[in-house]
Image (cartoon, rainbow, N blue to C red):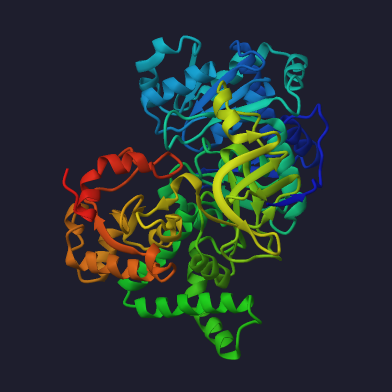
Length: 598
């Protein structure tokens, strides 16, 4: 067993809460722009002083509406400025925020609202409110319903005009460092989602220590685009971190518009999940193919990876330097321009990025810092540092956190960021907590430099009939980087060999088909039977198999005729695979792979 603890650089006073970060920001840099609101004519700046004033007005409206200290207030919306205003206002009112994914069904809403005892729900649209109407009788405590699209922020400001500054300040200071700040429900790959009790301390001390630890990245006055769902812990942490760090944020509600937002806003750093980087790479590759420059792009990509790899092995040769210089002019600068032209750093979390993508973006001049964390750890627990990067590793613990590798390879974490427990679920809490240590369920290793790598998920390890242990992620992650592939489900538990179910990416499919001589109007179900597509998937699997032993390699695969998406019920809102649902719904594919008859 190996333990690595990193002492905290900042320890907060016990009477502090998240609102102090905003109060201090407005006091120290009153005119600094914290938010940029996208308008038809450009971006409207919101200073720290203006944002604080708006939050205070909305908080007074919550108090006037009957919200009491420690009560839960739910927010169901896409990522938008009003979400952040309301989130901070809830904390100013001394209450607890409970995010709900805007894609959640009425049944999921009912569970979260009832389990958390939420007394109010703020939705984005009337359609969300209609979903709430279906379950309103089952959640009698949720007596207040307001809608962003109905300008509820302005309505709250009007309601709160009679609330004094003294009352608001008393409410604001009612929460302390170790008090509950938010209940974030896990994505729920199996069973009902569990509510993670996250404290003010987790957000404050992670933010303050991250700023001290990453001074070259988290620079006051820099900017970023926030497009991850604010119902997810990663985006919530970023929301608080940017206020603490004085970083300008613009919100993007639609992930499909991220490219446009990057080009218009020109951020210096980005926080994203690996799928975003995969889309950037695949989009550039397919655009090059369409322009008859596919071979040039692939050569440029290979040079980029080789150049980056050489940085870890004595540096590039003269030939490689020249090639990198040429392709920077021909290819790399165009990709940088597509991301706004100013992007220097990106922090990637949520899943492994993959070594090839990490090397590719580093060669472009974008340093991708991989991090690791969970909802239960208030997002990041470890992160790479710009001066100490090993592609494929997720860095060392942030100051104030610790990691240990158990004898069975499981990663355990402790520190200022760990949840108090699962809301109203002592049994589930006891399963994952041992004193101050939290069992992540992930399998990993610490190298000689203290860098953590994630090798799989404990519950997802496959054991073949021959007794071979296989971590699906080793094969799934590189395959998902292929532009044709949407999702991959590697199977083989108690089976004679490893196999895979593949779903296609409907967004990239027509582009790929057009670039490879196929019929670009082909449906996903028809493409699943296309010899051209099948051959391309086989080639991708052959490449992935080079990463593992023969016993661990994919021997057979089937392309299923449907996409695996959140709306189909096969992915969580944070895009995690619901393996049990996939295995049930596509049992016929498993039978086909192993020639078993139902």
